[in-house]
Length: 325
Image 1 (tube, helix red, strand yellow):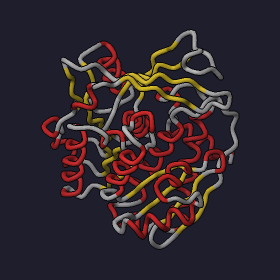
Image 2 (tube, rainbow, N blue to C red):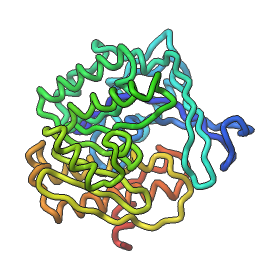
Image 3 (tube, helix red, strand yellow):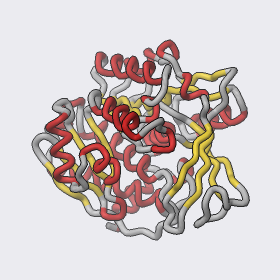
Image 4 (cartoon, helix red, strand yellow):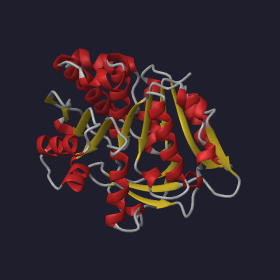
């Protein structure tokens, strides 16, 4: 059975074939399987830990492409559900000159939004060691109720709960509602990973040190807060320890999937180095430094390649990069 279970959206990124243009200016798009939780599931599997994906896609060619792609990379897809009425979500993506993605979503409603509590594969979830989810599945019903139900099962089963509060204003009805739903996830998480923009949005401060301390104080069940800093690396804080790990310089092709690669690597390291919440709380400075150097390397490798899922590294590739650092 899978040790890491990821729940949420799987979708098709329609990536502009030209760089440095707006979506409206793009002359063509290429379909690429994606969705942050699906990317993390693949990233975990490519790094050598068994993973599963839970979510719903359309019973359409894109939905079957997603299932087949995840299966190809070793992800357990037995918990995926297929909707006969709604289509698989699409996200049109253009990349700016510096490789930063810009999104427009087509999901009104898409199949992932219709994932229900009865769709949750509790058999797989109860046997997992780590449960990972994101904020997009908290934005709409019935997927919000399904996510909260899965969180209840994960908690009861003793899973370490990981949360990525992806900030996607294009999907929000209002900024206030988007923030409220991002905050819901924080109440259930043991581990949270944010970028600098998400940290400032949720805490009102840009400083990783101040923002992480604020989250640990506000949500006392948190045992690890991680802030990714792009090419500068990352900052981490537990209730007992904190520190920073520098980034690894690379020639950037694009940044799509880098955050998901980082999360996948972090979860793999948590599985190897910590057993549950208390194990994370008790990680040493040496453990934390090595863990996030590994995660930084995974993100850096992904930045050197095009696409999300194809760019995610294997454990051997990360080890090779770390030998050169």
